[in-house]
Image 1 (cartoon, helix red, strand yellow):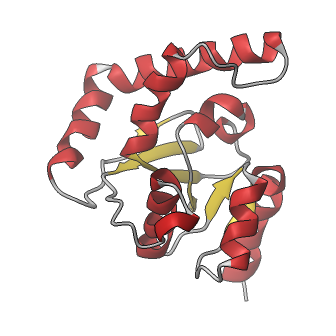
Image 2 (image 1 turned 180 degrees about the vertical axis):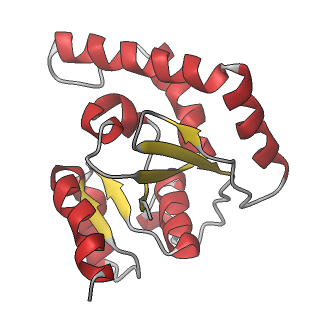
Length: 171
């Protein structure tokens, strides 16, 4: 059985190690974060603090967009867009990683405390009973401080998060 995480599409571009995990993993990604890739690609704002890193991440974003636009992947994504909370079939990202796109819906459950994408991550995590994987320390803090009933992992703890499920399921 593969480990599952809710995350944003841009995480795949920024953190290449997510695409080459040691064991099977499925990333459940809200569709709005896929659309955000286009905004990030077209933005003049740097995503990373070093110019070389920024160019690399923007290249990876363009590659990810192109991959999602390939006919088979595009067809999988478009199928889930007509029904709220529908999920695409898995889109392979290597031998152990796959993405499932979910047509999540922000219903402002968390009001001002979280932006619309963060709200979609939280709602998807609750609905799917899957932890969130993020690099946003402030988001993790707000989840903990707000008592939001989700499990969340910092991307720096990815290897630990992958092992935790193995530990939990073996007891």
